[in-house]
Length: 205
Image (cartoon, rainbow, N blue to C red):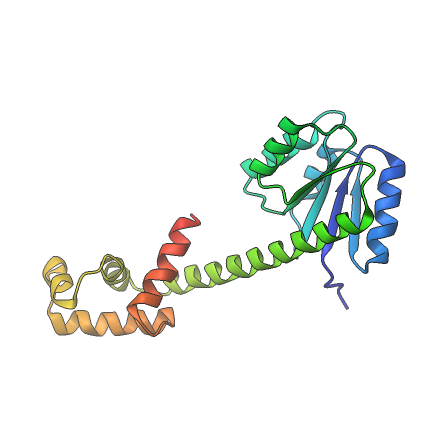
């Protein structure tokens, strides 16, 4: 049976820190994977389930902030918690502006880190649920015929059946049939639901 527990990724070049974090995170009944540097983590690839990243600021090669920027450029949205023994205001501001969940100074209180980890995992679970819903909407759009897709685009723009019929050069009753099929295939009950679904996936790219 596969392990469905969330995973905490730890990236820190200090072996003693990695070992202590691994032991504590496992004690909290969470999966944990540790890495010695940013490049090693990047080679691992994105997680399959809910996860967060506990990341040291100062490391050889790519530092923590560089890794955060690289992950953002790859649209890798796993929540990040920074830990550092060399914190300063500019670094913390940059980390938080980059989307970090928290920025903790070593030596930190374990309960503070655990609280941040649970917050990050809850955030990632919510984001994954949204991404799954968006993927489902995109798959439904793919089931539409070219004409139904045209009708969908015009309905989302707020056009009425009569206006759509004029624009597409079709009978209004034909547009009504297409519109009904669009609503059925998209599994929505109202135009408002349809607009929300389509606009959200457009916003996500």
